[in-house]
Amino acid sequence: MAFQKFCNMEQSLFTRLVRLGVPTVDLDAQGRARPGIASLYNWRYKKLGSLSHVMVHPEYKKPNAGFVFHYQLIDVQDFNGVGESELNPFFYQNLREVEYVVATFMYMRLLGYPAEKISVLITYNGQKHLIRDVIKQRCGRNQFIGTPHKVTTVDRYQGQQNDYILLSLVRTKTVGHLRDVRRLVVAMSRARLGLYVFGRVSLFSNCFELTPTFNKAEPLETPPIIEEKKEEMLETQPVESQDVKMEG
Ligand SMILES: Nc1ncnc2c1ncn2[C@@H]1O[C@H](COP(=O)(O)OP(=O)(O)OP(=O)(O)O)[C@@H](O)[C@H]1O
Image (cartoon, rainbow, N blue to C red; front, side):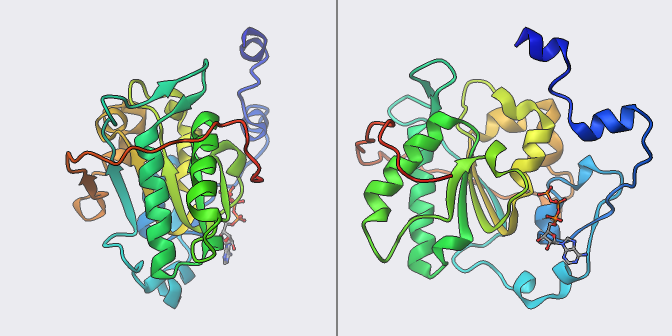
C-alpha cells in the first residue's frame, strides 16, 4: 500500500498524460445511456450532454416494464440487526442486499427481460461470491430464470455496459472505496436503459464526495428512493462462498 502511494499508482494514464502537458479534448456527449441516467455522472465532466439517438431512438423512449423509474435508489435496512458483515478483512457481505438483488433479477426475468441484458454489479468481492452462490441455487437450475449476463465487481466491469444494471453497494457502516469518485462514475455509467441501486441511502447520501449523484439537485431528476417496509424476511441459507463456478 505504501509503495502504491509512493509511486502514485492510483493515478490513471489519462491523468499522467494531462499532467505531462499532452493536449486533450473533452468528451461533450455520451451515447450509451438514457439522459436521465447520464445525469447521475455528467457532473464529473465540463459539459457532458447526450447524442441525439439516446433521446429519439424508440428503445430509449420506452419505459422499463414493471418499474416506475429508469433509475431507482432502494434503501436496504439491516437483516436480523446486521447490515454489512466482514468475515475476513475486506471481505464484505450484506445478506439483505443479496436478497433484494436476486429477487429483482427474478422479477425482471418473470416479466420477460432477457437474462443476458441484465448484469449485477457489486462493490466488493465478498458480496459478489455470495450473490453468485444464491443466484446459482435459486435461479441457475430454473430454465425460466437462468443467470444474469455477468455478476461481477464494478472494477472488473470497467469499459463494459448492459441494458439493465442491478448494483449492490454493500457497506452500511462506512462508505468505503466508493468514496473514490472515479469508481462511483464507473458504477453509475454502465447501464443503458435501467439502473437499480441497492444500498444504505443515509450513508451514501451523506457522503460529501458523492452528493452530486445521491442528492440530485434538480427535482425532476431526483432519484426516487424506495423505503423498505419493516417486515421480517424469510430465513435464507447462503452457501459457502468458496464453491463459485461462474465466470466474470
Ligand atoms: N457517435 C456515436 N454514435 C452512436 N453511439 C455511440 C457513439 N459514441 C458512442 N456511442 C455508444 O456509446 C457507448 C459507449 O461508447 P464507448 O464504449 O466508446 O465509450 P467509452 O468512453 O469507452 O465508455 P466507458 O469508458 O465509459 O466504458 C457504446 O454503446 C457506443 O455504441
